[in-house]
Amino acid sequence: MSRVLVVEDEAHIAQGLRFNLEAEGYSAEVVGDGESATDRLLKKKEIFDAVVLDIMLPGKDGFAVVAELRAAHNYVPVLMLTARGRPQDVLRGFASGADDYLPKPFDLSILLARLQGLLRRSAWLRAPHHSQPDASRSEPRIPEEFETYSFEGKVIDFAKLELRAHDTVIQLTLMESELLRHLISNDGRVVSRKQILEEVWGLHEDTDTRAIDNFVVRLRRYIEDDPAEPRHLLTVRGVGYRFIAHPAKK
Ligand code: CA
Image: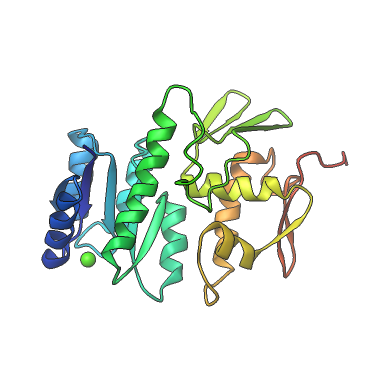
């Protein structure tokens, strides 16, 4: 039975979620603020299979909670609840380390489907041989065409969500991994900001696309020897980005 932690201060939403998760066969527990969430996940080291995390919480907000988890190397799958019409929340959520998001008010069946997607993905990651997931059930926006990818001394392990460069291992979030996979599978071609929003993250139109730039800054810190002089992840002014695995030497 999968164990889900619901972090939500609005009691009627929290109780509704718990009731419905339990009806679907999950074990669900509710906390009403961010402090209690990090207390249980980090201090008490309780094991949950997924966290449904609201952004607007009293005290420590959802962004702070997920950032704290990732800083402590806790990679429990996090589904973040964002306010509708605030795409900047989504991007900030991904940058903080969330794995997926759902705008409020949400349809319960969509929440359950997203949660199942996250759990399936993490179960697959924990499986000993990383066997291919059942194609008919896999998430369409996580293409599984390659598991590892190497370029210039760096190895990205999409199955383990790890990037190994020299002696360091960086743990990637699902969203970072998906963005890298998308850029790499378009090696040499320009990927527009719109394409990143729509095809990789499932966002639409009115999003402030400049917010992606912050995300790219982070990826550059991972993959570039000198992030200020990127050679692999290039900005194409006014359009988007281009990944080049083997740039010509300067
Ligand atoms: Ca709230």
